[in-house]
Image (tube, rainbow over all chains, first blue to last red; front, side, top):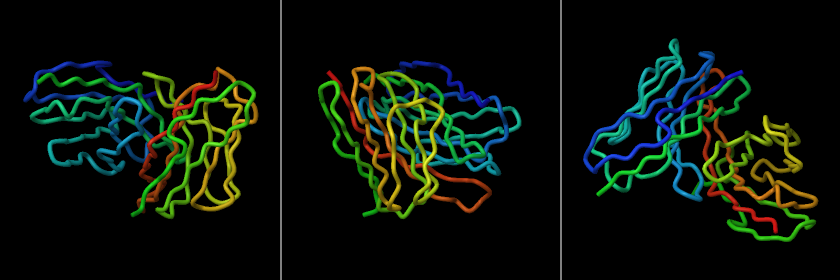
Length: 111
Length: 116
């Protein structure tokens, strides 16, 4: 059974720092991996999607990498801002088109 | 504008009431999903649909039911609400990316349900 783990569970950094969020999964037979952002009490916003054949994706200050064979992904956020404060969720798509989510990393960027 | 909508955004209701949470998407996606999320906890898939007249139960057992009569509409119904149903319910839809089994999911804003 696929399990997704995110480390750390919570992170607090001063504004301007570069940071890395980690995601690991137990079954490498995935179709893609998505990173989402969730603000308190809100829905999920898709940040980046890495297809199984890709190694990384970039959008603005965000860069996500995927190492399918080792079951790992990282989300790199450059020059963090207070507006980046949110919960970041990692999810992998299995063979039934279903997403399996990690429990998230709660990020606080202090001004 | 293509989007995914959920109504109501917030609902406070008494025990025993029947409720329907609405989800609609204007993106023409064939696959739709319902997730349940307790505060600060993981998302759990409770229902999904691959297309019209197709519905399946997800990984988390739920007393709710769903229907998919139209492509764009995927409502969730609780026949008799209980306090244990208090949670946030998130609807999503996905589009096929072209590769084998690859889809990107888009989420609605969620419905926060409180059952007294």
